[in-house]
Image (cartoon, rainbow, N blue to C red; front, side):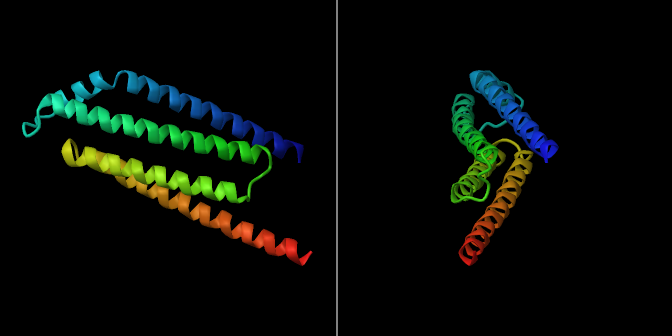
Length: 157
């Protein structure tokens, strides 16, 4: 039992480190977003939209995506906090999972805009984000069912 508990603590620690790493990479990208957008746009030959407007659009989508990503990382961290307190099958986690699914769907929408304007390669991000949203929704439904079963079990005792 002790080794299982230690394994869970180590897994939570590793996940928190990864959350921090993802946040730091996202901050780096946001700080350099104009130069990254300019370099990407210069590699494309789109004449229907001026380069300046493309940079503004790309950075705007990037900033919105950054906020969505930060919200998703916060949600993941809150789930970890609850799990570390052994509060797994609770309504709060169901709500957090629902919000995480919405974040994935928002990310897929932003990637869809990027794919429609600049590169069809962004469609792979669209489908990956939708796929993750579906998986998260399934996990959310499993948690909700587990809570219902737990409540029924508590009533029979």
